[in-house]
Image (cartoon, rainbow, N blue to C red):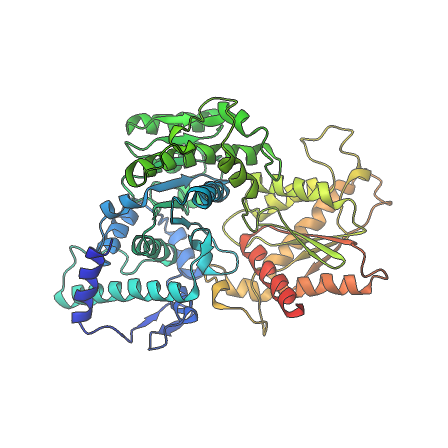
Length: 568
């Protein structure tokens, strides 16, 4: 897929703009494009496409939210860099939306396809586009499971950036507005989505797996007119400003990825949400498959963690992988006498091919139910940031935490969600007071009550170093600097402790020490200091749970792995 792009490049070069020096300004910072074009330069410039906190706040106050113009703009951006929506059809896109588990489902599909590539040589190249990233922006755009290299990221970033700037400059000079997008330049997520299309088309991707950002209908990933198939994971309440406060409203947005001619699959949903998905499918002439009755086919697969929702994600991934394999192989590749051509995974107790089983069992999706060991410390990390995901993450940690002599919680959630609901769920789990447990299971003696609770920003502050990949302009910098939000979280935890203590004898249980610290760096140092004061330093004694935010978990992983590398 080079012809259209090649014409755009030639047109762009005739303008003499190969090395522009264009200053793009935003509320908090500016960046000038010069001759240096490294990965760091690319990410620094990319960060200027973020929407700053004060702008986000004004838009919310004005009630401005994504609508059909968002996709119209994306198609115009796509045209500016030399492609049309029909060019994306060659990517055989697997498109996944949902409230929880959509990234995991994409990772399962990718892992299954990797097994077929290993055993049969096809699909030769699989693209994976997900968000947000944990440590490096490059994680969002992967080829054959691996994030694209810094060099490749910089190359394709500046190609897209320069083509957009050239087209915008010509339009401004000609005074033409007909083909101009409403937003003069794509914001951060839209730019990366646009760049992913360019990367995958230029790199000859056979199958591309796309996770939506927010919603579905107006998401920037939703300009693919003919995906191979679509999937909708479990639905819940999230991103209420953009999607609505009712589950039916959210379901309508998520259902927007369904396209005529592309089979769609979903998991068990609340009845009202399922009706919405079915109605949208009917309107669009889409066959919607509820794969809940096929859960038996993953019954014997070693899915970790072994929660029902994770099996639902894996089961959904099986249907998506089966569909895209059959479609792409029929169109592009012949595998005589290979099992994929005769795949029939529709029955409840189908025995899955080895490639499916290995793909599901060997899938790695970082920052979710992740464990790292460091001498006397075991770190449990999960970026749970919705009520449903916190329920599962907290249960996962609690099951493992009771054996530790010292338990530590590190929490932050500094976005548009309600962190106090998350804290309430977390507190109930670690103290053994969940509504899901029987009265016997709710005994305080069986709890994993923490000895230390730490609230800190996800970002480094002050003189702590933080690379460009961690820059997040969508948060209130003043609030981060004065730690006012973390103090409110600490007050909330104290009130939860006080409420639970009323009428109960807690004298035999640890009274958590609650600290508000300036950064995740300081929180990790705090835990390590505790470990260094223990007499038996070689013994596994401390269990730490880092949760509430993907950004917090990503920064923590970066610190832990950087420390490990320096030791090695």
